[in-house]
Amino acid sequence: MDDGVGAGPTGAGPSDFTTFGKGSFGEDGLGEDGSGEHPTPRAWSIPRFERYSLEPNRMDKAISNDGCLYKGKLFRYKKDLKRTVQMYVLNENFELQIRRSRKTCYEAGCKDDKCEFQLRAFKMQKGEYWVVQMFMKDHTCNIDGYHARFRQVNS
Image: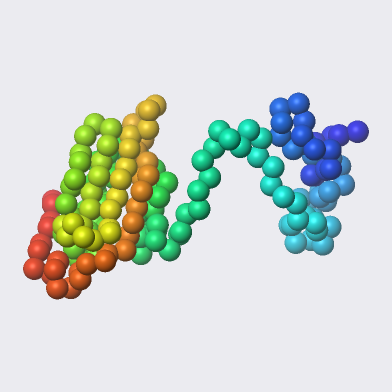
């Protein structure tokens, strides 16, 4: 009988999600060895996987040094996104070029067109939330030589 406690070998249930059987995990939620992991690793099964886009994310290139910007980051309003980008620019000491700023899209990059730094964010269809869809934090330009003479501050 399936009582919904612990992962069991019963496979997919009526909603195509893995069902849980008694005995796989103790009352504390830990596996048999107490580690919190199931003793036998299993392959992931994602129902209707063709609906999802799963792409590798190189975290070292997709997270800012201070952690305030990364691919997938949500902002409540566009002004919050812009403020965070400006703070990042000030901390990293380079000049930003806004390439596109519309009601549903915000794109920015380094002033040097050959530099790989860029950020792209879009407004989600429902609500006011903005999501960073692309963030390349690495500068391929010479930041010290090219950007040190620029100053970009907004109050």
